[in-house]
Image (cartoon, rainbow, N blue to C red; front, side, top):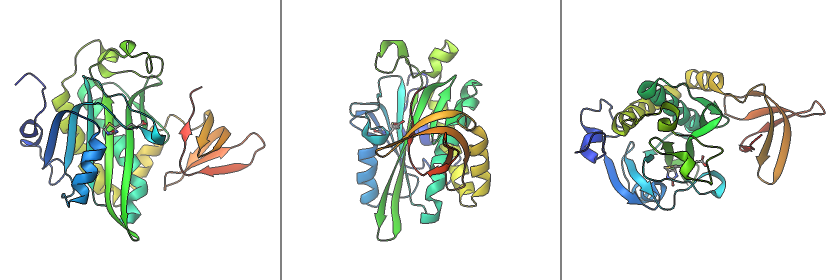
Length: 258
Ligand code: BTN
């Protein structure tokens, strides 16, 4: 096995979690880990089942965008079965888990752009997509989709070259993907369990947001807002102070590039 190469056994062996990553489904290449994870969840896969791929041919981003997943990146979808009260915390769990595992693996200091993009030096290194399946008023499953640019030369991808970075571009060296993936799963489990108690996860996520205090332009559905990102609420929504002084609460949206 090449150094850092992925396999189901390499990821699960002595992982030290109680449920996240205890079952891993690995693909060298697939369309999207979200699709396979959804099918697995609908077939009854247990909480913590992970679908991981080296490369995706139709990676999905937020707001129906495409997510580029070439060789050297990593694509992961984790099946959860949370209580509905826990849903707002999943963006916090996922983004903090990415931040902690990158810090652990590289010593770099990533930041979070509301709600859950992970940045290094103002460039995106990781994206997170959460899809939920509801059954009546309950959550049947939630899938945490996490993509990280690990070992790739972003300059070779003109579509993202100006706005994205990778760990290897930042460090000028290769990063072992296996260790990073294993740490990510450990962190997801730890934070997910903490999230069931709410506050500690919210406070750390809020304190890591690079967005607060900044003048931003934001798209939410068909609406565009401008203003100063003033604060966030424990349910994850953003409070924006608009130029006329009025506050608006944005539940879901996307901060547009400067
Ligand atoms: C975004 O920032 O727009 C979210 C990107 C999410 C990408 C991940 S990669 C693993 C999972 N599979 C997908 O097709 N998308 C998510």
